[in-house]
Length: 384
Image (cartoon, rainbow, N blue to C red; front, side, top):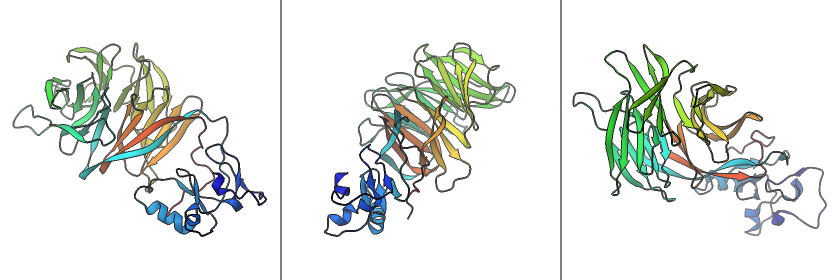
């Protein structure tokens, strides 16, 4: 940031601390770098945190209109950026790319395989889509969910999880769990269909699904008219092991296994609960979110996140929150669509977010930063 400083002039009383931890730069000395490159000299009214440059009003408009830079964080320089040295280290999300569909789709579930490939459930067209592990994220395999009977409607896939290097399992709105295998030719093959809910005696639906590699068990959240909310524990072959009903306070629509494989994280519309897998005793609960919680994410550093639908914001109806027992609930980033699921790849630290009605899947890179600017500081976000 030395190019933004004028070494010969004195500093004014107002100063801003740079996000990269550099020395203070006064408002008087912040110039528009884009204008300097063409021989002009204009005062920097805005600051881009991604490019780390000052911008005048006109260049800020052009900066955000650019296709490559329209996601950059450009803010008005009016108040100091408050950065405390006691905040870090915290993970930080940086958008790195998207998957674009031809039409808007509803993607209900997502998961990464161990090799970095991404599998999602296309609720709109009843398909399972598999994308490559490279940065291009090309479609390498797909499966149309088969009907169990010719006279029935085609099942709609909901949540999905990986059960091995080349194996997947997903739930459907018909109360069944489908188990897939990714063949060498990238063909998705259905190995077995496990009916979790017996529709002859009652009516219900399966929702979230999670796989615990420690005990080789599948955990499926279910709801029926007679039994209410419960978690069905299945073996990898589909054999029933046990039902968990008494310890659950709400319907867990989304499930995730913790980093140490001893905890299971459940989310419903109001809160996130944490249970011990051994006895399903509740050990933690996060209910301070003023939003509708959806899917859950746990990274390799032990941090817990949830994606949520905001109840009051219209321009950014979705958000990603970090949950911590000490610091509480922290908003990490905003989303421009209503989210449905989130997936994390420990191999590459990639995060995928899917949405209810959108033509995109967003990808983020999760990095551990030593210092991080808190969300909701005195700087007002730049809006055109």
